[in-house]
Amino acid sequence: MRISRKAHYAVRATAALAAEEGKGPVTAERLAKAQDIPLTFLLKILSELRHAGVVRSHRGAEGGYELARPADRISLADVIRAVEGPLANVHEARPEEIRYEGPAKPLREVWVAVRANLRAVLESVTVADLARGTLPEPVKAVTSTRDAWRPH
Image (tube, rainbow, N blue to C red; front, side):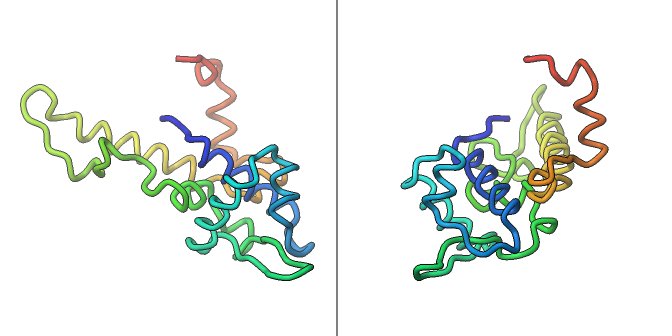
């Protein structure tokens, strides 16, 4: 799986907003500087997150952005879907929509399994988890194995 720069920035920005939860709106400029994200790119990302109901914006001198719902109810999957669409596509099609013939026929099930495993991790981790610096035990268990850190 390839995590795009856009998804990476979106997750980092929402984690930063989660860390500020309850303290009022955070300006895009402050978020951009704190997370080292180009401001114009961040503004586009925040617009998509707002449109998807992940963040809300406030205008005025005290304006900025905040999470639209509690941080513990926003998964990484929610954030990534908001800016990228479905978690796993094969040439812009959902795995269940693809049909293969011959020796490649079982490949459809492989892509569905990949999506299910991706979903299992990304839906279990919230932006609150990131802000607190904790991860769910199943995720920690996977990363505690030496094999998980193998580069390829």
